[in-house]
Image 1 (spheres, one colour):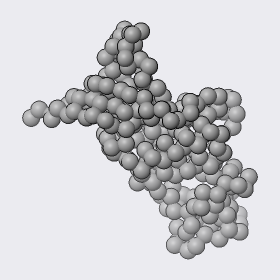
Image 2 (spheres, one colour):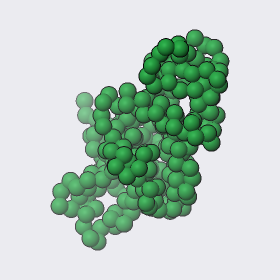
Image 3 (cartoon, one colour):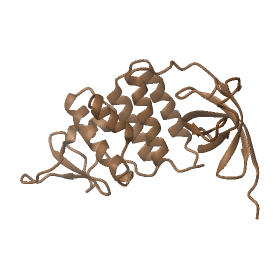
Length: 239
């Protein structure tokens, strides 16, 4: 049975990645609000006079149209919607980090409208100089939740309320477990878990411990895949 030939018009989307397909064309990886992550062939997009050339902007809201029935669809049209400041400097690195997470963790053609909205909010925030820790942790939490790996932060693995003064170990498959006095290894304060549940990252300890916890969670779900943007962050500064 032949696959149904699909035609989509007026789809809200962001460009995640683009790479050459031929001397004149590109493959673009996009994240569309109603259609998820897709690969599109942008024919002629590398030509100097291509109408697509100036439209395919990363970290900018786009309206796209495409058609096709295979794994790689064909881009038919693109329009830059504007309204989002361009990323530069550190904000640009943070944007690439968000994109890499989506590219490596998000299945193809699996719609995630709420995650799309969270991504747009994160881009808008970092483009205007918002606190990077808060925006990265919010997005990482939203991504894991959308993938079915949501974190339980206000209650421990036994179902009891997390206590701010108690230290815990967070187990990926179980949640927060109270630490016994003689335990070693990565632990975090109950206050950190409660702060994360409330998206409150004012406490420097919460910033540091939440960063380590999210690295642990993402590393597990990436199955050992290295994040190239993480390597760049380490070289430039600790994120």
